[in-house]
Image (cartoon, rainbow, N blue to C red; front, side, top):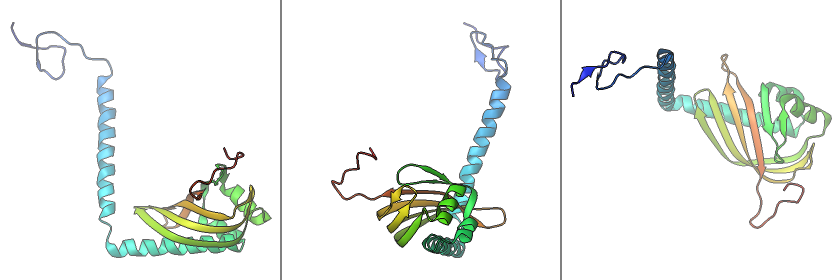
Amino acid sequence: MISRIDPFDVSRLLSLSPMRTLKGTSSVVAKWSVFVGLTVAGFAAGDSLQAMPRAEKHEVRHQIEKLEDAWRNAVLHGNFSAMDGLLADDYMAITPSGILQSKEQALTALRSGAMKFNSLELSDRKIRLYGTTALVISRAEVRGTGPEGEMSGSYRYTRVYVRDARGVWRIVSFEANRIRDPGERRSSKAQ
């Protein structure tokens, strides 16, 4: 057997049998290279996020805590304009019953009184920062009513903030889930 360079292979590796390349391979390689490059850049950006100076992390956490307090006050007092300023235009919520709610629907429920909080106590707040994104997880003790009826009880929620190009933080996503006692069953309506 005599080794020869495969005349059809752009890699010019030694080969015993001619291998043809697929047409368009160079565009696939180019796309793959772009994908790999962006992935590496994303990981590098992730590493730089971890390198955020401690003072800056503290300041951002403080800003998010103030926004959480502003949100709480807005829903407790039915402050439509404050809530409008807190929510991004593409805001989307998932209610405890799994219903999707847009910004407009949330504002309409607040303005009409369909969503009314009598009390809202927050605890066990955790804030995680990812560059221009902040993730807040908290526990809420709620007494009130919503478009779906009574919403009193203990809940866990996740709220996502994103900082825009002007440096303004807005809520883009919210999801709440009722905390059930051990052994408590969901109602047949929720199943």
